[in-house]
Amino acid sequence: VKYHVDGDLVPAEDASVSIRDRGFRYGDAAFETLRAYGGSLFKWGAHADRLRRTCDALGFAADVPNATDLRARIRETLSANNLDDAYVRLAVTRGVLPGKLTPAIDVDPTVVVEVKPLPRGGVESDPVWDGPARVRTADTRKIPDASIPADAKTHNYLNGILARLELQGTQADESLMLDGEGYVTEGATSNLFFVADDALCTPSESRPLLPGITRDVVLDLARDEGIPVNTGWYDLGDVHRADEAFLTNTTWEIRPLEAIDRVDIGGGPITDLLSRLFDERVERRCYDSDQLRESDR
Amino acid sequence: VKYHVDGDLVPAEDASVSIRDRGFRYGDAAFETLRAYGGSLFKWGAHADRLRRTCDALGFAADVPNATDLRARIRETLSANNLDDAYVRLAVTRGVLPGKLTPAIDVDPTVVVEVKPLPRGGVESDPVWDGPARVRTADTRKIPDASIPADAKTHNYLNGILARLELQGTQADESLMLDGEGYVTEGATSNLFFVADDALCTPSESRPLLPGITRDVVLDLARDEGIPVNTGWYDLGDVHRADEAFLTNTTWEIRPLEAIDRVDIGGGPITDLLSRLFDERVERRCYDSDQLRESDR
Image 1: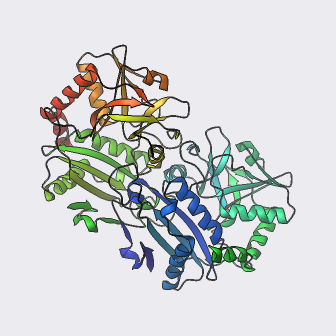
Image 2: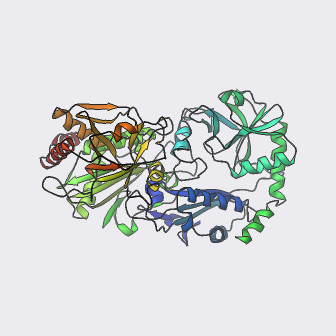
Image 3: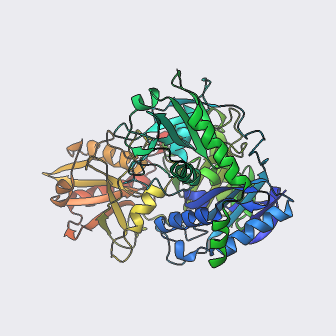
């Protein structure tokens, strides 16, 4: 196995960063997780855009290699590992800087690409998750936007880890997080959707959450299909009363939510429909528009 | 220069951690910064206790080497670099674990010790800071305890970095952070003290802040000296109206606050008195009680 670290392909056991790298010292880094399906990076343009927005929130976007360069590093890594269907993790840190908390102006970022095999799934195949999600609402509250913007995807991940640690000793494998006002935001690593009155509902981006790329795809698919879509401010009761519910992220794609806080919910016709449409979208390479966009960058 | 990484002394340029270490990937790590004065670790017992509390908040305290072991690594590192007066940074990560956010039960932590020369300062010597602090109040709000406990000192440091980034283009070098309710908490890397009506005031630990070891020493010194001490909930107006103000941390010790938000404050008789008492405490090795405590661990 080889990874790409700071411009070079290196064996996995040598893939390391300096202890003085701000990515290690402070979690001062942006990242994206992506899927390669049949050798193509799904929604690369959207991931590249979001990575740039995160680096912009952290104040070092101008120093980050451009999307073409980053994509080339990912492709080299996939190729070196002979992978067509893969999980990809791309991280960009603020690099090694003088030992002060305030970042220097000149940044030499560290770029890291990790890959591992992940079967394609999709139409007529098995999903990557072992079973539907069992969820518990965490006591740990989502960090407010005023403290760290929730739409920045960074290496500061303790908020989600603390929420996940609450699951020890339970059957659940994902934590649902509320914000400081008690509104539903998202799972530790996933966005939440539910169906109520035949409409697809998901918490609004005006609450502190990371709007996932898969979330965007699902919203597009629902609108194209004529399914009513509501993005709003929801409390836990709204979720507990839902007719169907599912979680989304890049790895899970669409994963039905079997139960939350011991309230059974499960998938249903809209979850099934969206799952089929998502699989078809992957199969039909309907993400060509993103590939075109890449060549413009 | 040599650092201590995962049990070994290594040249600084080889001091690195795996990109799969959770300390890098998620900032899933605890740390302490310490001073060695004349070869002795100042307040080692208090730092070791706090490190353990942080690891406990992160759920892996049981797997961390004991304080005697950690202190031995620090001493080896100081010795290998021929340092008696030094800055010391001790970090313990949750280590390399399977690529899932939820931590595994068995943890093999990564211990990192970094040192660098830092002159002793103290009585009749120059302080380590170049001049008194110029402070601005940040728009970035302190993370609430319900999201991440503020008294855990972790590698998730973006909240403070975002506050410091707001200083770009100003003369200030420290950011004062308010919490979500508008109460004063602390600086990005320091605790705040101010003098009002001849009493020493500092924000209460019931607000989200990290109660520094230096803060504790200063509170002890003030009480021993008969200075009235108030810990409370303060707003920015209380600070702006102060007669004196200073910041504390392990590196700065006691650093007068020249101005905040362009309001001049500066040190004064109580700041000077506490600074002298602090220097004397360092000189007189009044921290022997901690050293005794160490040998018991």
